Length: 342
Image (cartoon, helix red, strand yellow):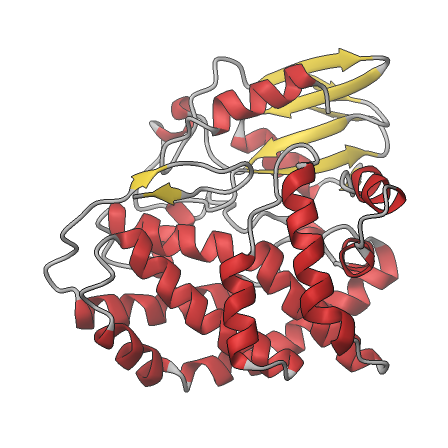
């Protein structure tokens, strides 16, 4: 991605509000060395592109990961993850992995519900230390994800908790080398000696890695966003407050929509939030326009388990913080994800 395109993304999404963005134009085209970069800041146009067969997922991390490996940085586990994650797969391989994930997540959904009282007691004991919505969101996400990853991998609980503390967000519109190095080191430490040989073990490890890399941040943001916004329903709040700001696609054949043309090879960043002018014309109670979990072939596989976690978090919050928190958390977007700070 060009520096100009990266700056545009940071400018619009770095100053996003909970429910919308404020972009002057619905689309911005940047051309550098013959490569077209298209930034879409209109949710209606995003929907059309996500549902079109003229676009596919694009692993824009691959060149950066290869550079890390060529420079001698151990990143075998991270490279395998980006190669096999359904986030970037297409065709039969994508369908096969997605089907396995769906079945596994259904079972994990049931498994997680049995942990409700355990997590409630855990939070109750630490209630005085968790003074902000962000503190609470981190603590709930940390313990629930630890249960999930331990169940998938068999790795010790303490080691998984440490891994969750060490992890960081790597999702930006460009390759964030320092953060990818950090995740690469984490993956080598956590998974190198726990690589199963059979296919189901390999897929479970891939799902566990997905929780670490791209599951924790959106969940934390959704819990925190629901509390900050004063939502009465955490599971409805996520449809108003998208935890993921944008996704990336590559155009595979000419596509025209609403007077805009996209050509083969275009790299397209798509906003999952409405622009301010779209939001003011909507009914606040109408959640059908939301694309918080994206659309199409690559719609988020974790939607159902995310809603389960949000419902659990709401019960724990209401049980332990009926009067709210003594301190506030503020919105502080981090790359692709909505995030908060204290």
